[in-house]
Image (cartoon, rainbow over all chains, first blue to last red; front, side, top):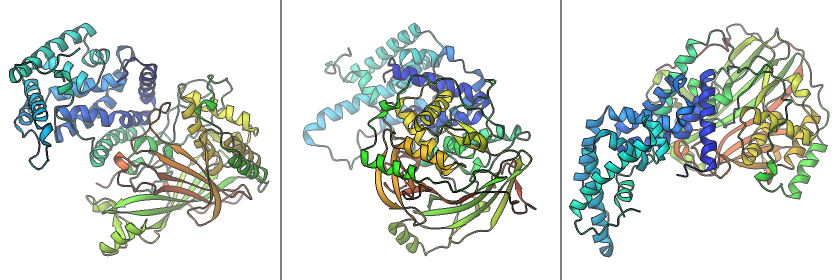
Length: 201
Length: 422
């Protein structure tokens, strides 16, 4: 992620310059599409698979282009702004999102035709079951906590960027993340009461 | 694994398909086009390669242009509804009708030597020899600069690829009262490789290919040549993209003919638009600028010599030795790897690394053609075979003349925005 490296700062500055320039020269905006579409599509389609993710990713750039006059570089990076727009769009489809998580949790741990080596079976099945519990638990998280958690873990945004994307203080991001983690951790402990999975940190 | 690691690896997704990316890009493009159309009337456009199929052209960096007063100038584009890779298309079709003063303030302290070692001595000798032989062969002045160019682009049709070619003869005015005249012709298409030919034969050897399966009104690409169409511009002195800006022929003649000073000029010009360019980006940007200067603008023998001498010291340049250009002419090629995801090179587009070849006649110093080969095609270009020739531009002839251009009755206007048929 490297959210604090000089390079990332340079990129963020350059993005902002491109965006500001696109106000007078709209065609410059195309650069931002080329830079961020694939990453943003990944984030959106993990939250809304199939056509839903495709739509959100595409619509994010349409909205961003229409609202480019409103972007304020003082309030965060272009990347954070784009992920914030996508997050708002996903929020409008939260039922579809939750259903997708539950469907994922119900699906087979691995495709029946995928060979599984005997010695790996136990760990792999256990990890897969744990992932399903966690994803199912996402469906039950309060929206605000889920947004913060998934911007960080699936969107790979820093806490600062997540704060900018959601328009909340960094400290609030921390407390939402903490709450969300506790909830999914509880879901995990349900399936793995012996505590074999290591604690983070 | 803790819960965060498990979540991070849960519900993985594959990168967006080329179709998904293209569809999203198209939606954005539609929106941009609509905005563009709303404000287009007052502005001048230039159709650069409007006959081309929806495939990207060479991606040029396009830093901001500023005029001497420091105010931003709006760039305008046309014909780009046909070219979906926005940034590339924009670079290819943009032109300014006003003039631009070369930068005179010193650039930021970036040393392009940081981009890597100089070319080996053998390559340097070759380029220096070409520089020596860039002889005086035309007056570099007149009422029009006329260029005849053949371009080719690899196009995906059905399940194979064809190389589609266009020809364009352009009359670039050198006086403010004259209009540009472009004669454009589809020059035919053919299966690109032996494998493409076999696939074409299995498909029944069709002699034309729909431009868009979903839109018959868009027409077809044909195996044979099409008719010539004429496009005429607004009265204005022609400008040419050089480095980070656009110059008139007169301004190009004033460029430094000392390779060191020419390089400083180009770096200033590039940094003026994109102040944060790294050494590697500058090296690529200068390479692009030399393509502009050698192949796409009215240069002079002294400037060509300076360009070859500059290239002889440009980090990252490699020698490919004797080659034939896309028109079968013998020449020498030098090449640079571009659009590679490496440290120091940001904003690479998602199509993957490519090699840009610059082919010239080492005996006369005459630029022949430049071409692009996809080395590691990815994303929207993943259908291109690795190593395949992707596009090219061959200079057939350039000259200065005081002749009058061909008649333009019934010609299309450059300002017209083509609306998509579907």
